[in-house]
Structure formats: structure tokens, C-alpha cells
Length: 403
Figure 1 (cartoon, rainbow, N blue to C red):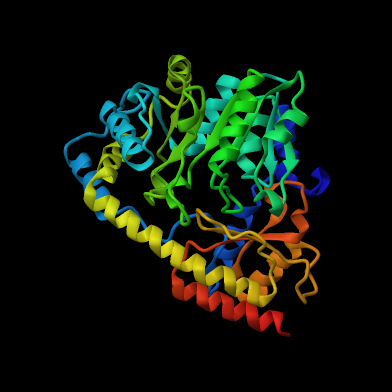
Figure 2: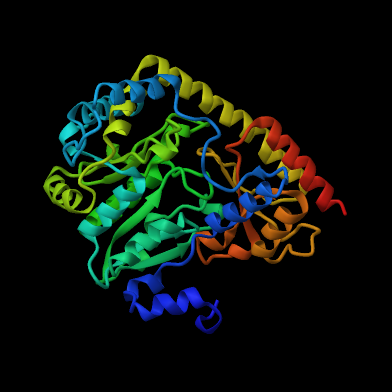
């Protein structure tokens, strides 16, 4: 919206905002969430397939640990790098889940994965640095780079590449201004993973050019078609980002972590001390219970439930006429093509998403958020909602698309 018609924007401009604000676009997912909430408040039966949030909440042992932490008075500041016991527990999880040995001193606990990415970009990105990313990708990743004066360079990655960046693209587009890459496996919005060979090749290509590799592994615990692989298997110079939000279902607790080269730890500690002081003490004490046998069993059962939903939903979308050329193998997203649908808005994903919300009360997300490579022909579905609600969403979509 232009400033002359927007009093709020005019008032903001009067404050002489920093130029970096202009480089950060609105997060359209959240706009859709707000609109769906307004309809729900007005009495509509909304099926949310927009926001990337599991319908499960934290396992009971985790909730109980939070209560016990509050009662015991464990609510004050912790050290900026996180509780030593939690860093050790995370390292133990890498050993058991991924077969990777990690020194706990390399683990930095953060106020969510967003804070982890923010710290990584603050430490690594200079004004004018270019950072390579796949297109499509999670929008906030490129905005973190922009916030520190860097230039995110999005490289189109189609279904034939499982929507993932390749080492060949890294080699082709690397120049004197390129500083590193940010990739995700499994990816938001596509739910697709890199093969181990693909991941290793990218890391080697970046390493050979003296750059950094940041790998978003938020959904690595939610892999459905094979054992998860961590990028940490391919060298101590790799930086990974993870979170308690997805596999452990602690979205509102705002707790994540980084694994970084040992030399980077004091740098991130200094930044964290100044920018965040420390992550939530209560969330950290609660997260210690995530690695109990009881909590892990709950999370594994939920992972299988998400797989059950995927195995129903993807074929159902294809039956309705959506294009899903690649089976998502992790997370809880489907990046679907709409351009061959018999619908008036099949050529415009934003118009299509709003039409679906208004006509069916199913909330989905247009492709615009996720990059510049054919976003108008894609929408993202999140199947992190109950199986029966997904079935109902399919029925509603079928009624609209059959008109």
C-alpha cells in the first residue's frame, strides 16, 4: 500500500526508519493467519493448513518439568550459551539419533531458531555480502541476511532437483562478493530433503571457496522415508540450526540451538549476551525432559502420525488436480502446483488462497512468501492438523473445484 493512503506508514516514515526495513517484506503467512482468525471469531469453522505449527503440544513430561522448574524457582537468568546440562543433552541426542559426536561446547542454545539464524547472520554477514539460497525457501532466512546489509541470492530450484540447491549452482553463481550458503533439509515450504551426497557436495563446494555453510535442520527429526542425516557429519566447520518447536512440539516456548565451529562460540556468546542475555530459563529446564525415554516415545508416535497424514493427503491433492511432482519426505508441508486446476484463480496463488479461505474456510498459503521462481503457480499446505480435519479440508476443496 502506498504511503499517501496509509496513515500508519506515513507516521512510521516520519520517524526516519532505517533503510533495512525496506528490504524486509511482510510475512504473508501471518497475514493469512490473521484473516482466518477474524473469520473464526465471526463464527466460521476454519481448518488451518497455513501456519507451520504442529497440532500437538509439548509432551506431558516436558510440561511437568516446566511446572517443577517454576516451583523450584528456576526462573532467573541462565548463562547466555544455555544451561550446560541442556547443551550436553543435545549433544547426546546427536549421538543417538544421528550417530554424530558433538562437543557440547559447540552448542549454543538460543531463543528459538529465529534467534539462532539472527546470531549466525550477525556474526558472518557484512554489508554487501551475497548469500546463496534455494528458491523456494523459508522467507525469514533471506530477511535475516538483508537485516545485516547482506544480499540474499535466490537460485531457482525446481521439482527435478527436489527444490534443493546443488553444488553446480554454487560453483556457477559464486563470485568475489559471495560469503556463503543457507540451505534447509528438510525444507520449508517443500518438505523435501537433500540426499546425503547432495548435502556433502554443497558443503565441499562452499568449503573450497572459503565460505560458510548454514544448514537449517529444524525438520530433521520429522523424516519419513529414511534415517535422518545431519550436515554435521560432513565437517566441524558446518553451522546447523535446530529447534525444539517442530519435532518436540514446543513452538510457543521459543527455544532453539546452533551447532557451530568451536572458534565461533565466543563470538556468538558475546552477541547473545548483548542481544538476548539468555534463552528462557523455564523453557530450558523443561527441554531437558525432551530427551527422556517417555518424551521421545511420544515424539516418535507423533512423527508416524504425521507420516500417516502425508500418505493420505498427497494422493488426495493429486486426485483433486493439484500438481505434487515430488513426494515430500519430511516436515509437514506440501508445495503444490495450482496452474492446471479448473479454477478461475489457477494462475494467481494469492488470489487462489484468498478464494479458498473465503469459499471453503480452509486456510492455505500462497507461494509469494517463498521466493521468486514461479510463486504464482504454487501454494503451500501444512498438514500439521488432525487427520479428520484434513479429510474435511479435502472434501471442501473438492466441492469448490468441481463447480
